[in-house]
Length: 206
Image (cartoon, rainbow, N blue to C red; front, side, top):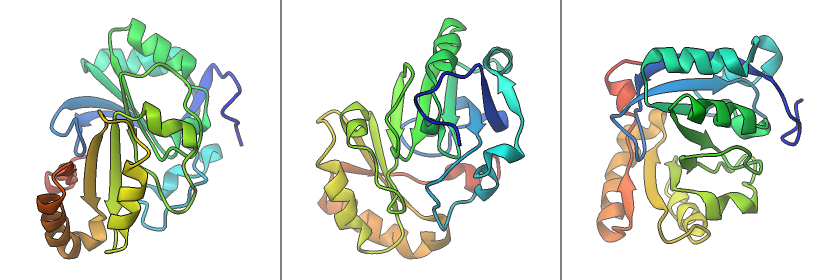
């Protein structure tokens, strides 16, 4: 498995596509997604388990990744996974920003971050603890709510973030109907939080 401290001119890419950001702070914005392959976090409810095995996907040169992103016409490049922070992303983010794109990352926080970012979304998972260094870098904390106990877990992680960090609670998709009413009531009584929904799934787009 690649280590987060090594420098690579290629990265394993499961898929890349231009779409609408469906969740979190940038919900509704057009964005080019770069889904890197490889993940050892192991979320049982992950909806892209095919991304876990990095060896099952082609390694692509960062120059080509950036060319595709620039040609999409998007102003935002979202690096997601898998777990993208497994890799050294310094070269990729440098080239993306040089091409005029904002660099956003979606990470569980399981590894220290590399690269230069315009927006960092940390969505910690119980399956692998987040690295302590990610919390003071997070622009956005997105907690997936699967059961009632997750609200206490959300507060414990929010306490580690900076005062400017945007806080979101998002229902796990398979438990959405059950969790949305609980999230609504929680946000009403704890207004520092906001509701995040996976609107791309409602719109049936990637």
